[in-house]
Amino acid sequence: MTPAFRQGFFMHFADANEYVCAIQELYRSRNNFTMSQFTNHNFSGQKALVRVDFNVPLDKATQAITDDTRMRAAIPTLQKILHDGGSVILMSHLGRPKDGPEAKYSLKHLVEHLHALLGGNTPVFFADDCVGDQAYMTAGMLKGGEVLLLENLRFYKEEEKGDKAFAEKLSKLGDVYINDAFGTAHRAHASTAVIADYFPAGKKMFGLLMEGEVKAANKVLKEAQSPFTAIIGGAKVSDKILILENLLDRATDIIIGGGMAYTFIKAAGGKIGNSLCEDDRLDTAAAIIKMAEEKGVCIHLPSDSVIADKFDANAETSGAPSDHIPDGWMGLDIGANACDQFSKVISQSKTILWNGPMGVFEFDKFQHGTKCIAIAVANATQNGAFSLVGGGDSVAAVNKFGFEEKVSYVSTGGGAMLEFFEGKSLPGIAAIAD
Ligand code: AMP
Image (spheres, rainbow, N blue to C red):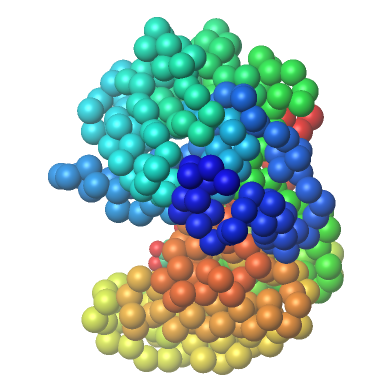
């Protein structure tokens, strides 16, 4: 066993075999499918060019990382390559630089933390450009077990434009291309999609994170066991129309909660007081209700709500039927009856997709409904259902209540997961899978 092997994640294993078996087991249990191209590939002596999503939030003043979830999510992929004896060349974007390099968006702010996440003994080098002589030279000298982090891809406009020449330049940095950036899989950028054209079959593949995401999403979209319940919440109907339409062909039950429920309730003739409502979407909401009836999909709206006299953490609160909310009051969470109503549907499900909170869970007074649903999803999962939580705020909610280990899969890709569930082909996936 090399000293490099006994680092971080690996410290728990006696030898390399034990580690590989553990990874295989983890992989099987998490994804319930056979070993992947990535897991079967031996990276020994190879330079793996890995597209990761290290677009982590940084403190404005100190540039310290405030949430490293995205970095941690990529570590198993990197560890496997390093453990094989390969070297890793990392490409990522960070923030939204406007016009070329900006110090605050430099990936050099991440080097130290990456070094720590890899266990503290893996050499991590940094190239202050993602192409050009220094990048090529450092990549060329990289030895097995070493890591090179390249500077922010979006310092070049060519990245987001999907420029072929730029993609080709990037491709020269590695022998094999790994896409592990599910968060940007819905973008046809140079490093996420176009670059795959410059690697032959067998030299381009998904990393563990990306594969896990795709398999989990497919389990819900293509292999869902019935009853399949989709729980859709959050603020706006307009953001969720495509996903709702796509789910009408797949789900048996659709639970609608959060602010968007009130547009549906008003469309069905309810009185919603000052609750959030998109009046220009009333027809769409009515059409979705009608389509659901025609297709035999059961739409569940919250029977009651926790109402507030203003949108404020310290607002006065009361309870009301969701279709009889007094003027001057607004629904900011689903009520106790709705919690029971929704929990019952969830408990009978075999497949569950959850996107969007049931209320303004950021305020303690209005977090109860979302927490109830998290408990119901966790219980159903324990009873054998497959549950996937995807999309920004529902993930934040599950994390806030400490339920991330109690559901089958928590997606890291907000926009990408949404587009996946809208039924769109994601360029980052198509570039490798097709
Ligand atoms: P989305 O990004 O569309 O999933 O929306 C998430 C946001 O919806 C969260 O910030 C919630 O606070 C907000 N939200 C959930 N329920 C309500 C509600 N009843 N009224 C207003 N905002 C809500």
